[in-house]
Image (tube, rainbow, N blue to C red; front, side, top):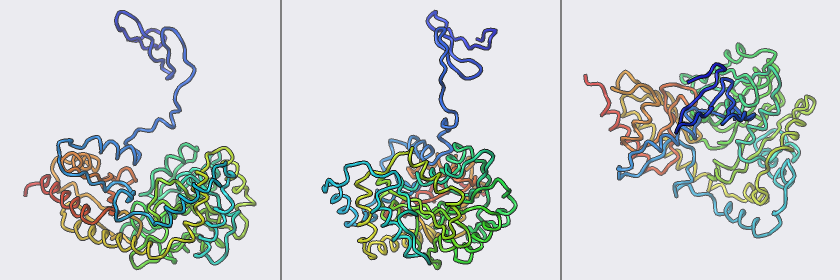
Length: 443
């Protein structure tokens, strides 16, 4: 019941407990508590990748004797065919055993790590980055946080791709950046809708985000398309945040081209890490690099804001930073090629097997990263309301976990990861086919 002041009252064991005021604060036996949780962090689990995957895992049938096959996340390290390079493991061990990296690191990162990343990225650029252009972060996730916080100001907005990686949306909301979505076009290989960019932007737009190679679409942008992106951003007076965590993980006809190639046209913040290319997402070491030969980011004090955020933020583990130069410099090309060959093989399995499933359409074969987006035809299915319902019933009935497209911005689509061992992938796609046949409408 409710008293005259809007106070919720509960009767329990003969006691009246004051539970909740209309303004959301709590009281208990007459005490008025002045704190409450930050509503911006009270995120429903069904709108985050980790939240949804956790819920799908909880919905599995424990009596199913078959192994659960995870096609919902981008962590291939679970499978032996995707083990990291020996030189990477040895570099971490050597750095730890040296006892040279037990101290705090500078907030921007160890100079040796920053210098190594600058040299690593410069190999693909028409100019040279220096250590001062690089900031070491706790994986690419922290690089996202740093970039968005550095650009946030009252009334500002940012342009995000749809479909995209939902952490950008979550961090933008938390930084009080208004979000405006532009579409990636499946009929054009998931290219950016550049006309939409121009229509969405105004004087309060600070940046646009691209992810290349693409998560969740598996696309790779061409040199020509990226040049148009740069020219559009320059016309609008905004910078480009280029998420390149899957850099060089390409296996189609398009080579990887870093957005920094066009930094003479528009300033670029490049975000990356060793998580995906070296198959070590749990090591949590990444970077943010300022590609800015014209010095615009310094003149606008964006670089100062990046430093300011890092001064009040957590640092990557120091021995990981100490190992980074050897990891970047000593890993041999055959390691990367083996990973590419495996992903090319599994992406082909995925594409061909999906063709056999009537209710699923793959508009564009993956050419990079570890994912592909596919569309559901709900008109061919019985008792399936939407993509979320599809994924929960699939998990329960077939012990296969796939990410609903709504989580990455496209309702009634699915994001499928093919970064698993080939046998497991074939098994999973076979189970999905059986599931769809079981739920197909009778003709």
